[in-house]
Image 1 (spheres, rainbow, N blue to C red):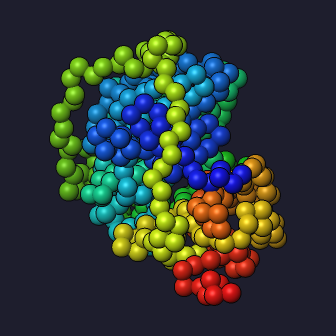
Image 2 (cartoon, helix red, strand yellow):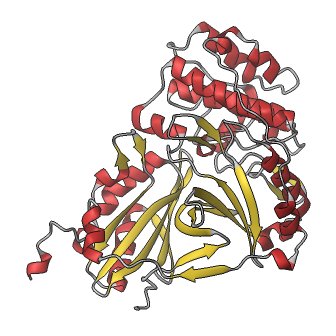
Image 3 (cartoon, rainbow, N blue to C red):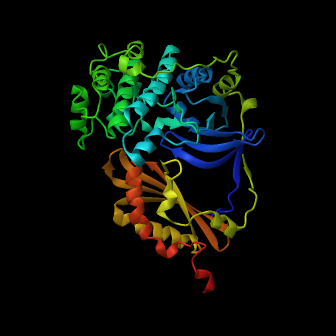
Length: 437
């Protein structure tokens, strides 16, 4: 095996075998995984144990994971179980493959009012149910609204998304556009009222295709949010405008409540209350074991060698390094990742990536054969960040994966167009004639 580490050994934890990374941030990483006993697909959120201890979040996280395990609702991502190793905590979640709701808007623009209302109704159902059990999201934003294969909305990260710094509760989102005005102060805030505000911003974006509060200057943005300084586009119905006016009320004490939203005429059109059975006798033993540091219940990460695949068969399944890889046209979802093949040495590939990224205004951080590209400009959703990794499929063939880890998806596509043209020398595809040299 070469030093690229590239005959990738798959990691197993408990009954799960990890696959690709679905998302990552400073606080956690989410990986796709399969239960090799049942064959079920899941998403596993991996959290650094030391970070939990450092921020004195053990009791809070234990309380909220317990609450989440008890919440079984059709519009909330299901939490199956919790595991821990000596260094990490693993939260096993339902995996949904329809992408984010906002991918639709990124690809096709605003939704029709009836469709936007249907998703908003499902969002309110989820938020209402969790609030009734004392669980507040505090960080509702596009990245946390997923769709399953039946186009059903699933809210993710309920109760797991906030961070505590210096004893104060702060929003963990990378952009404040969805945050209630009271969250921007240092006085603390009511989780229920701030969630409702965020739902209103989301409804506006669904119907308008853009944010109600958007300003390049952060202080200017804060002032707009604090005054609820926004304008509805002319295609909004009067009913939608009136509801938004009640939701985007900068005073949390007079802001509309969920019981009032449920009675609103615009909201009630075509409304279908959720029908589900609350699961009885949910077992919390795994949560107790994780947070009580019971050594007998600790799991270990094991590296398993994957089944070998003919390298050229692997590449023939891909479409090469093409912008078309970024889109799943059948579903209309925008992808945040792509990959390409190269017959160049790994070091040469790394150098080319760095050469292509720097002129586009990206800072490059290298570690072994992984690289993080961090944009130096603030975009619509903060700084664009891209993770790349080179690994070996065969002695003369490498695969390179690229995925967006931060920032706006459409900005990622614009970056990708320019970036890909700088890598043409190292890209190989099955149709290329380099083999005849």
